[in-house]
Image 1 (cartoon, rainbow, N blue to C red):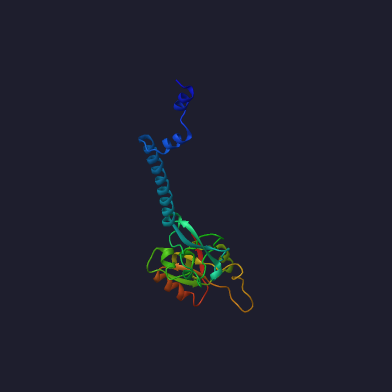
Image 2 (cartoon, one colour):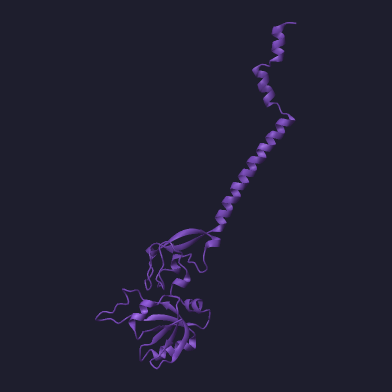
Length: 218
């Protein structure tokens, strides 16, 4: 037997190798299908993750810089960020129009989500007290230095000069900042703002017309 011809038969030429590689076969078809299935699964996972991120993130407004109690919000005080829906607090602001021209009731730090409870609004008394009949009442304190001890959310009782309780369990809604609460020659000390029931609000408002009032912290 011709060894050269035998060697050719035992060692396929390059053309034969290529033809064999591209020739369909059962094992090769299975491998191709598996690779294609893997690619499709990977694409589906990427699409699903991207879709979930798009649907689970929500735009909210945060403070662009520190905000102080009594400050009126302008367009430059807020900026938009996206948060996972499960981390967005109740009452978070979504539109700039919901916050602009409103007054801040308590200190808000840079990057903090701004919520309705931090702004003066018709809904604030109910949010603070949990009562639909709640009202906001401004009062002037008999001792101005007490205002520096109060913070938004504190619970106080309001008393008149005769030590009669006019309102029990009122919620502090707004305390002027230190700069705003310093009286000058032509101004008086700004009042603090309390949330309380409607009946208590009427008593406190009436008593506050004639005299400054006192508060007792809980």
